[in-house]
Amino acid sequence: MKILVTGGAGFIGSAVVRLAVARGHEVVNLDALTYAANLENVAGAARSNLYSFEQADIRDRAALDRIFATHNPDAVMHLAAESHVDRSIDGPGEFIQTNVTGTFNMLEAARAHWTRAGKPEAFRFHHISTDEVFGTLGETGKFTEETPYAPNSPYSASKAASDHLVRAWAETYGLPVVMTNCSNNYGPYHFPEKLIPVVILNALHGRPIPVYGKGENVRDWLYVEDHADALLLVVAKGKLGRSYNIGGENEAKNIDIVRTICALLDEMRPDGAPHDRLITYVTDRPGHDLRYAIDPSRIREELGWRPSVTLEEGLRRTVRWYLDNEAWWRPLLERAGVGQRLGTKA
Ligand SMILES: NC(=O)c1ccc[n+]([C@@H]2O[C@H](COP(=O)([O-])OP(=O)(O)OC[C@H]3O[C@@H](n4cnc5c(N)ncnc54)[C@H](O)[C@@H]3O)[C@@H](O)[C@H]2O)c1
Image 1 (tube, rainbow, N blue to C red):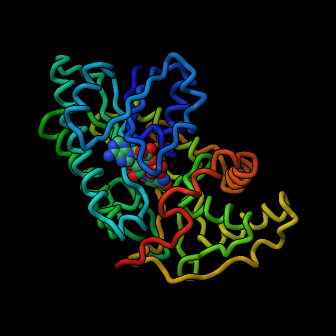
Image 2: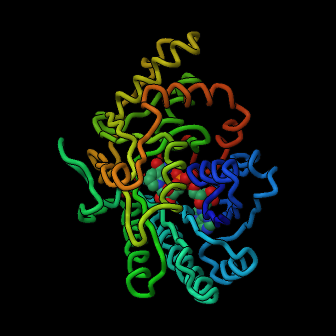
């Protein structure tokens, strides 16, 4: 299969690119290379002749038309997005432009390409979204694919809008789409502004480890390589027009994640121990959803997929990876906004 992956220089997109190439798919990586991108994430895959790269912005429709015409993909996996909730609080405009207008452009470019090709049934537009579109849960319950949308942040609202566009393009124009909504990802190559890499790197530097509110927020953690595996399954075997929730079956409170990472660092880097002395509670994020949890029954029952990595194992691998890959993360600490408290301008 020849797959056009958008956002393939980002965290999840690069995991998809690496796995797709390893499995023998041709991959065209389309990425604007924003602050969140790093071509180092795909340096190994880029050595394969199955891989090609197009630097382009999904807000630029003409560029998208050119890329579809040049590469003639069998499928699109659309991951390009502005993805950091705190940045969406301070500057929502970029999120609307990229996540909503950019997805609209991708749908229109894909539709034009698919129509020109005679509307092949096998073509797929796979839209990758988040469980954050469902809003927040209380102490109990899980998100299913039927849970009503109730996004609470500019980021999740922009993703919800993009999901609705994808659904409408399937219903109105018959574009062959599949959709996925996943929980919080973690693992290697995670940009150092998100919780888990922030905890690891602050602890390594002996800096305060910021925990929002009381650290009681619960997330359902999904190892990024498991997610990439699920996404490649959905694009190949997912039922047309269907959406699938993808979770890690690993619910944990933020504070417990932070304490586990500190304990792993105490073991692997004992010179800084005990790392949990650095935990510092800070003002909560405005509109911070309390709990997300995925009911993964549909993808398990229809496609036979389950996560393979437990939270304990995944965190161990992730901490090890950051310890072994300073050359990857060190330059990223210089990028705009990294290491600063964002999302306070509400
Ligand atoms: N990280 C998570 O835990 C998570 C959870 C659920 C869903 N998602 C979704 O998965 C997708 C990927 O997330 P991620 O964490 O890898 O994000 P990321 O921020 O690490 O990467 C996003 C990539 O998209 C590119 N991009 C941004 N704007 C672009 C534009 N206008 N044109 C072209 N490329 C552009 C960036 O350069 C970057 O390489 C997103 O759609 C996100 O909403 C992420």
